[in-house]
Length: 338
Image (tube, rainbow, N blue to C red):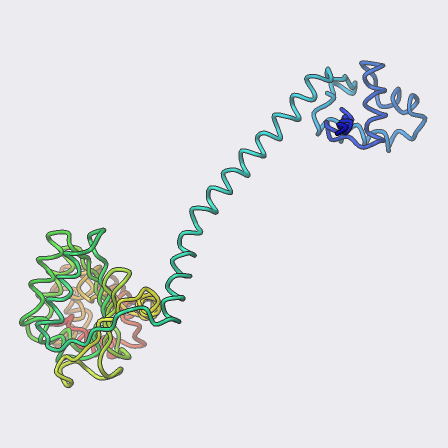
């Protein structure tokens, strides 16, 4: 077989020059050092056009400009600069490829989750009883491959919160202390005044949990890590009324759906009223609830009337209230005035 002749690339093309730039670069090489006017005469072209082409050659790095004079770089040096710039671009493209390969792992997980969802290749386990529910959470946390396991839960009713505070909060708090899980919970604001709830929630948050409140939640549900979800036997109902019957669904697509719902509710929920609020703000609300006027409150606290009014304004903003009366009602509902 005859070998095909190699095609030798134009060195000027390798430098990134077009035909007009090549001619100008050759002129600069020959003159070695020249002004725009000199080069325009050599090229027999208008100074403005030659000037624009010279600017392009300077950007390409094949000539230098010093005080209005243009000097040609040695062709080997110019080519070396072009090669270095291309190597830098290749390195950046390589980093982008590595980043894309890293990010595709999450897409692969989504693909696998969707495939499992369509094919039905995931387990659904029916469970019953409050003991089973709360013990299952700790068991899943113990078996988690990457503790602490993230537990998200929404509790829609006071009865479930009462059961949690009386019987089941301590194992979750202990699991948090042992770094087995971290809890994020959304609960009804009405449950804050139930016996024992405040103390248990305080300990839960002090050991790393997070709790927010809403007036109303759509249903009980939970996610345990990235692979397990808990769903009630009847969506929208509370667990105690249905003997704590629930499903453990082991598939990431359901976990992802419920996690998105939780995040939406969490964004609209409010922090616990005793976390992050000003004790001074609560003091004026409590004294006002006892029927004291601004002057009396100021004397009682040893501050100015102006400070008292500023704290009322702070409380109204915090509570989303339109009046002091409304602020007092909302503060009482949230358990601030106990």
